[in-house]
Structures are given as C-alpha cells and as structure tokens.
Image 1 (tube, rainbow, N blue to C red):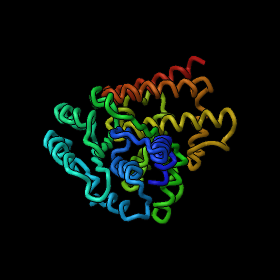
Image 2: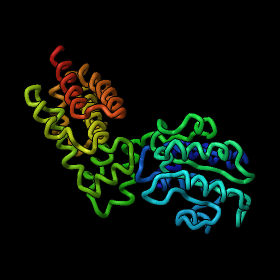
Image 3: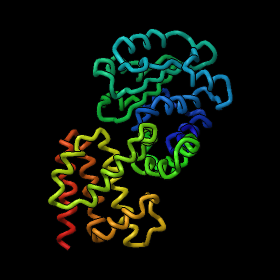
Length: 318
C-alpha cells in the first residue's frame, strides 16, 4: 500500500515541502478508501518527523505508539467534541522527543458540526510545533471554515493496473491472477474495495451481474434490475459496467490487445457485437451521470434501470 501511495502527486508534494522546510501546520488528505484511509494518514504524517520506513519512529507511528503523534478517534468511533477538547489540552504540552507534535484525525467527514467547529481556532493558530493531518473519504461534509484553514491533498482513484500490481504483491499466493485482475477492474480505483471483493469472494457474482446488465434486452431489464439493484456494491458495479463498455469499445475500434478485463474476452466480444461504436461512447457519459446521482443518494435500482435503458435505446437509434 505504501508503495502505491508514494507514487501519488499528493505525497510528492509533501516530500518536496519537507525537503524545502516548507511543511504547513494543517492538511486534509482526501482519499476515498475507508479501509486504507488510516494507513494512508500514517504514510503522509511520517515526513513531518523526517523518518524513513526503517527507522524506529516509523514503526512507532505504524503501531500508533509514538508519543508525539496522536491518533483520533478510537477505532470504530466518530470524532467528537470530547476528542477536540482532548486535543486542545494535549496541544499545550511540549513534544516528548523532538520539536513537533502531530494530531492525526481519521474519518473527519464523519465528525459532527460541533466537533469540527471546536477545532477551528487550533487549526488557524496552533501552538508552536503542533501540526494537524485530517483524513476524509469525501470533502462534502467538511465545513468550509475547516477547508479554509487546511491545505487539501487529494489522492484520485488508482489505475486498475496499479491496483492489480499492488494486489499481486500481497495475494499472489492465495488467488489466481485472473481473480485479482477482475477485482482490480471492478473496484472503481479503490484498493480497499478490491481487497474486500477478493477476500469476500464477491467479485464473481459482481462480474456476472455487470455482464448480465450489459447483455440484457429491454424486455428483461426490469426483472433483472429488481434482482440485483439492491446490491451493496453500487460504486463497484457502476465501475465494472464502465470497464465492460470501454473494453467493448476498444475491441470494436482497435482490437482486443489493450482490453483491461483480459480473462473475460468471450463476454466482451459479445458486448462489442451487441453495441455500435456511438452507443459505447454514449455509455461512458451515461455511467458518469449515474455515478453522480448515486453519490447524492438517488434511488439506485431506478438509476440503474434508467442507465441501461438509455444505452439500449441509444443503440436502437443507429
């Protein structure tokens, strides 16, 4: 995971600021991967202490036992007003080992308005040597007054190949490469999503559902959506639909050499045969619209049915 994180522009920015002695006192790390958010925060806070992965401080940070790097909230809890008060009190104490004291707050988007407001003064004027690293999977619940006091570092979704390579380093002895490939393609750029699908065995059913949607007819669509529309993996399903339509577009335009879902070649050829080139291009736009609506809590079964129905209708027009 750390190898993947260190390739990001966000991490490169922090390292450049470290080398120039220009690190700020408050950052917000945006990383839409709940499973790996805290691991990412640990990677990003280490430059504040100028430590490498082999050093004692690095190991202490990973274990959350470094006295000058404190993590909030407790696992499974939301950041509260009481946590903010504890940080306010702790921030008045001098660092134990060096010149800096860091407060790392995970899942900050889950914090209440009162808890966020409680930190505003500290974020604007922290005691000397005190730094903050906030983590969030989305920026929308974070108060604008907080955002104005922090420098935002955003990690965009990873490429499927990057995730595949990362999973191969960890899971190559447990899962076939074809399984890892499918999970990498279906996770929507989130390593944690790929890990969850791989470990839970959900990828096989998800791939079958995505292909059934792509290859369905208008007549069968309502019943199919009723069957799979309540999935808990909405983002992953939409991401996989995007990948299937994109691979079908690649097959139809330049051949199969550059497809992502290499183990699903047979079903991809069926999709490429079913749809016209303009329809496959249109499908990408339709999926983007469905992703936006899903983010804002639209009715997913209805959203899914409208998406596929629009693609089928577009295909009939040409």
